[in-house]
Amino acid sequence: MADPGASIASAIEAAILLFSKRGFASVKIADLTAAMAIRPASLYAAFGSKAERYRRARARHFEREEPLWQVPAQDPFELF
Image 1 (tube, rainbow, N blue to C red):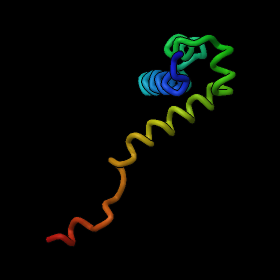
Image 2: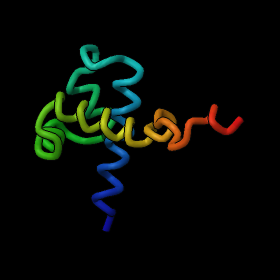
Image 3: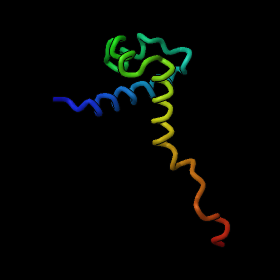
Image 4: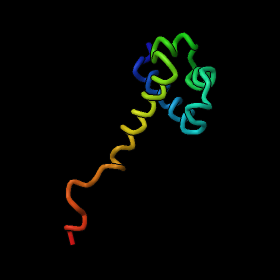
């Protein structure tokens, strides 16, 4: 049996890519369902709405990128 967590993770990645390329306003439900390889009913059952899908994709993206944005614990200029 397929891992549901892996399926959700791959769907989130597909949504991140789509929203990144086209922006929230340009992405239609049909675009999301095609990219995520799911039916509209499954999209609504799993994520509730396009806006919720966007929020979760954005949160996942920043979760992954956060280390790049974090301020170092020690001021790097104090090292010199």
